[in-house]
Image 1 (tube, one colour):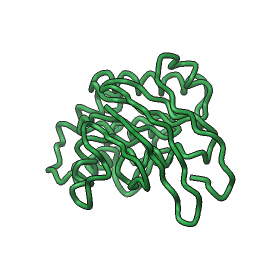
Image 2 (cartoon, one colour):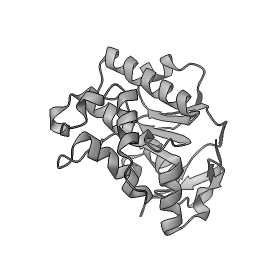
Image 3 (tube, helix red, strand yellow):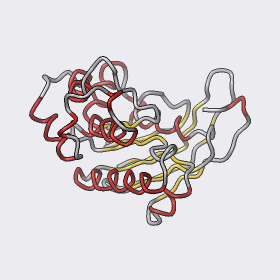
Length: 219
């Protein structure tokens, strides 16, 4: 679940971004809609505990994120949040399987090789475990990033513009995969997007609209 009230954040030297209130039940879906630079990525960073609100409160998976500090926040994030960034951040120095193992390191857990291979198999990636990211197609790389995000069975999945560079077929496949994965985990799914195809594919999802802001407030 996710609830926010009076949420605001100001990037250094700029005016505060004011964000609408939301209440999303566990297992629900929320779309953050608006143009690039309107604050959607900032909202995701607040929900993941990567940023601290300047005002208001956001509660994610039963935890007031702003109340956590330092290592406690990092440990909470590793246990509860699966983050699919717009830039996938896959290490070329590592195999697909070892890129997933980074999630275990981040959570302070021993590497579970069996769990890694189960997750890869579930997303149709089992045959790619030994490849390097440069040996993957764009769609395969996105699936690997999603596998890493959900490896520890998070309660919340945050996806930042997951369809921005995809054609219509790949867009539909990516959305179906996100929805299926979230449903399997009973995870709350949040998608930040300016893609009308996402809105059309998820008409029942809750929505939080972000308005365009001046260039000096881009986030």
